[in-house]
Image 1: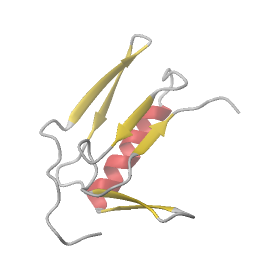
Image 2 (image 1 turned 90 degrees about the horizontal axis):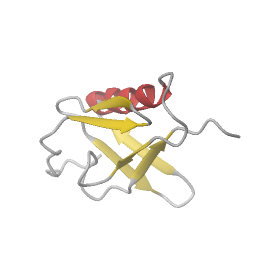
Image 3 (image 1 turned 90 degrees about the vertical axis):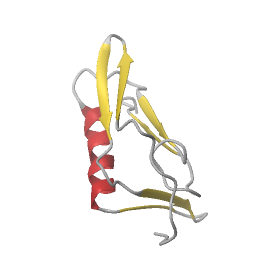
Image 4 (image 1 turned 30 degrees about the horizontal axis):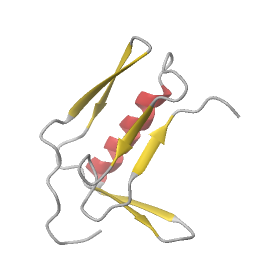
Length: 96
C-alpha cells in the first residue's frame, strides 16, 4: 500500500441499494483504505484492518438471504478505493 496521501473516500459511508424491493446497506468503516492492483496474472487487494472489515461486510451483505442473483457493487477510485486502483465489482451469482 502506498504511503502517499490518497483520495478521500466519499462523504457518504452508507449506500442503500434496492433490488427487487429488497434494500441492502453497504457500509464503509471510518478510516477504511482499500487498494486494488492488476499485476497481469493476479489481482492484489490490499487494505488496512478497517478496509478488510468493510470488504467483508460488503460480501456478507451480498450473501444475505433474499439478495437477488446479479446484485452487485462497483468499487472504483471515486467510490471507495485508493487513487490508482483497478476497479472491482463484487457480484452475487447463484448460477453455475
